[in-house]
Length: 185
Picture (cartoon, rainbow, N blue to C red):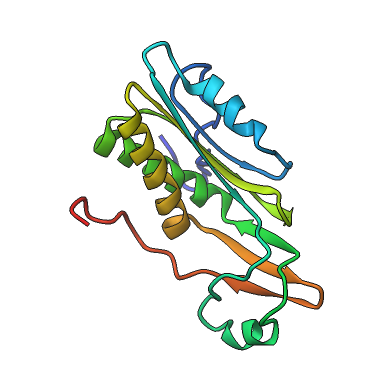
């Protein structure tokens, strides 16, 4: 029992999962490439899985939609090529949201083997910034689960990105959605 003056530390769940089962939820500062799809697929899939579906997001040279309040800065860089993306995140909250998304995937699609790995820090042009891998007995569920994972991550996870240009940066994206979309949408 806790008493006055006691401190309680809430430690987020350990990411990674056991080989061949479960979930892999990671925020990485270290770069990774396309090989991450094979790595995650090998760690997730079991003999019951006939489908492994992977998605990779990369830094592209064209600008995205500026965050609210960033329109003037975006206009200043209009027509210029993006040189890199800089990602920042609230790591503890992001881990929690990504775990919630994985729970939703299991509830909606029956897919319990999900990997979501996102970079933090500077990601150069053409480099991988996010990977999603799902493993399931059938391809339709694996495809749906992977699509849901990336769409919900982009809409809800507290991971922010700034497009970097030679002489400045622009924050990108919309305000976070507080929860999942309804199943009928």
